[in-house]
Amino acid sequence: MAKIIKAPRGTQDITGAESYKWQFVENIVISTSKLYGFKEMRTPTFEDMSLFKRSVGDTTDVVQKEMYQVQAEKGKDLYGLKPEGTAGAVRAVIEKGLLNEALPLKICYLTPCFRHERPQAGRLREFHQFGIEMFGPQSPSADVEVISTAKNIFDMIGLKNIELYINSIGCPVCRANYHKALTEFFRTRQEDLCGTCQERLDKNPMRILDCKSPVCSEISKDAPVILDYLCDECKEHFEGVKTRLDKLGIEYKVNPTIVRGLDYYTKTVFEFVSNDLGAQSTVCGGGRYDGLVEQMGGNKTPALGFGMGIERLLLVMEAQGIEIPKPIDCELYIASMGENANIKACELTNKLREEGFYVECDLMNRSVKAQMKYANKINAKTCIVLGDSELESKKAKLKVMATGEETEIDFENDLSQVLHDMNVNEIANAFSSELGADALNTLINFKG
Ligand code: ATP
Ligand code: MG
Image: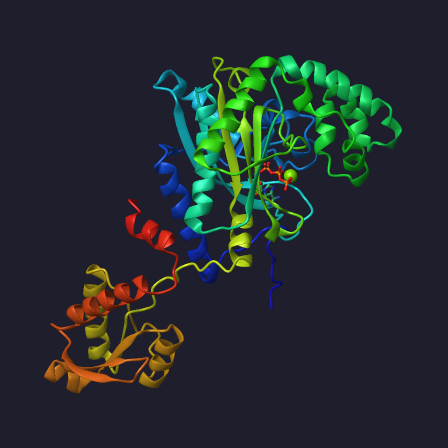
């Protein structure tokens, strides 16, 4: 036998047993963001390598250590598989001239991301992010709107114990003094820092605060904090954010150690963290990046957003026992005996599907016994068996699989009414079940 090829390390195949959970989460994130005015945008999976160097930053772990780079032809352009969603979104927004239209511009996306990291639970090499980005507003109200979008998504899903940490990392004005203080501090411990951080010391000392090496993070604990260096404007902005969060009743903790792993952030940064995730605890991270658009060649435009890891979100949901509505089971299996009955089964199946019912018939030329076994395996709710005598009388017995109860029906005319009545009963039952009311409402109200 030929050798079986395995999926690359750190990637996942999402089969039917899991994909409905993804669809549930994807529907909630997109439909919730719609209430805030975010429109979906899709950008390429790969971008010019220089885009990531300039935006994410060429001294960040992401660019220095974790990028997948591809070159289609020797000597030609180098591309990077996107490690996050913001860089491509900003590139597209500038290239398409969207910033010349009405501001604020609000976009959102679901995208695969690629980072060459050591795979573990909640840390993959291909993972998926839901992200939102807002362009134009300077007001702290925008920061709070972005944070509240994430919060509302978690509430809709029914997540508990998810903590919000916020910080301000200032603007280039306050950053200059802070960098000086940081560099002085780290210089006293220079020889203990990891090799990468020794190099970062002069170029970008704030990156050391985000280094994952245990020695560097230990040293960082005593480092000066940015909040003590904020300029008046940044201080006022941060106060504005906190006041509004208080007013909206969104709980948070100020955590001065949050600096985020990407270079483009300014002012507000935030993370939503869950205790149910072990080491990989951040489900969503984001903040302001007021300088990025200009840095990428656009007109100076304040902007902000977040990235939310779908895999981590699903892990927290699972840890918290959040129930996700299962996809509907096959509503009717039409078994058949002989060629003519199979043709009739085929015809009825097609007609009922056109009416919106999930129906199956035999495609494998199996015996009736084997067909019934299959109907059981796929959890078909009802079945009928067609043979020559049924074709002649146009009557068949409809069997409810769970109870074994049988009723004779006119299969040409009664089936769709029977299936319809069955659905009505089920929706009524679902309403009285344990399914979270919020989740159910989202599904029912989902406007496509
Ligand atoms: P971490 O500190 O856990 O490495 P990060 O700061 O690198 O996270 P971001 O760049 O802010 O992560 O990405 C936003 C979100 O994407 C994270 O909060 C997380 O939920 C998710 N994420 C990031 N890297 C991975 C990964 N390798 N596998 C799965 N999800 C990830
Ligand atoms: Mg990371």
